[in-house]
Every structure is written in C-alpha cells, then in structure tokens.
Length: 225
Image (cartoon, rainbow, N blue to C red):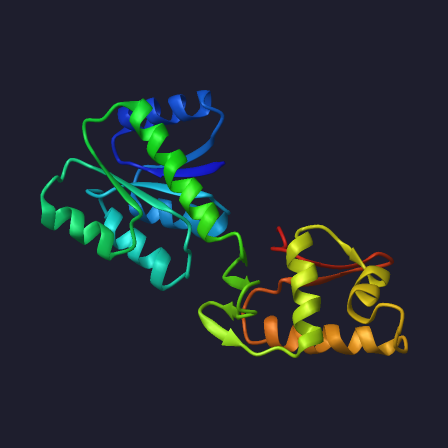
C-alpha cells in the first residue's frame, strides 16, 4: 500500500514514516498542504494521512481540493490535535474517512489504516480508476473528471479490457476476440473503435491515456515523462 503523509511537524512525520515502512507500507511525505497536493496529483496513492493545521493550505482545504477538483476518492485519515465535535464534523464534511486525535499510538494508526482500506476495497471492488477516469463494472457508468461519458456496448467492452489490464498492453488479437469472439470483423473495425474511444476518453481532456504500442497492441496508462 502506498501512503502519502502530509504533516508539518518533522519529528512526527519521521516517527510515522519509519513505523509505517516497518509495517510494510510505502510512504511518501510532505510538510505543507501545497507540497502535498503536488505529490497527490502527480502520483497514485492508496491512502492519504493529513494533518489539519498546516501552512499555505490546511488539511481540510487539501482534502476538499482532492475530492472536488481532482475527483480523487482514495481514503483520507486526518491526524489532528483538534478534538471538538465541530472540528470532527468539518473533517467528515470535506470528505474524510476517519479522524485520529493527537497524541495517538502508532499501533492504533496502523489498525485504522487497515480498517479504512478494507472498507474502501469492499466498496470499490466494482470500480476501476485511473487519473480521473472511472469505470463502474456494476452500473457500466464511465466518468472522467466527474463528467459522464456515454459509450456504445463495444466501446465499453474495449475500455473495460484496457482498464482491467492497465498498465499492461492488450494485443489486437485479444481485443478482437473478447469483443467479437469467433465472428471477427474486417481489419479496420478495431481501429475505428479505438479511434472513437479516444475521441470520447482522451480528446476532451488534457492528458492522453490510451496509447498504441506498435507491433503489440494498446494500453491505457498515465504516460511518464
């Protein structure tokens, strides 16, 4: 599990990061909200641990920005010395999944991380997500940056296959067989479907996700560099 810890106290950050890494987590960290936002939008994380009182952008603002602007639904755990009911309600209202009051035991932090992640996995078994693009396998709903995208049945199957195998490459032969089975169409049909899918998934947005891998097939992934 990859965790982003955003906490302005260097001693607390070091203590938490050391402990979490001993428990087998991969932990990145930042000391203020704006740096945390930069990391959160550049990398994929399984969970965010946020302090509330931070310079520049506080934890509540960071959480709200991730939820509203970047449509990031990954779990958020707040760490804070603020312990009033109003403070807790403010945290939950901006999208938090849990709230741990300072001071706390590191074992309790680990237990809460595991509990949050179990709940999140159970709730999101049907949800595939990549860089603001989501596919709900139960409802067949497709969204990117919150905007719903209407796909034909075959284009939905194409997208689902690419998402389920991301970031791996799916061969042309596999895509054709999974969509058309034994009744394979002419050679231009897959190309036409990929073109249409790109028009709907990529063209209206800044970041391209669907990539052609010459001689191998197609993949959907965040292109690095």
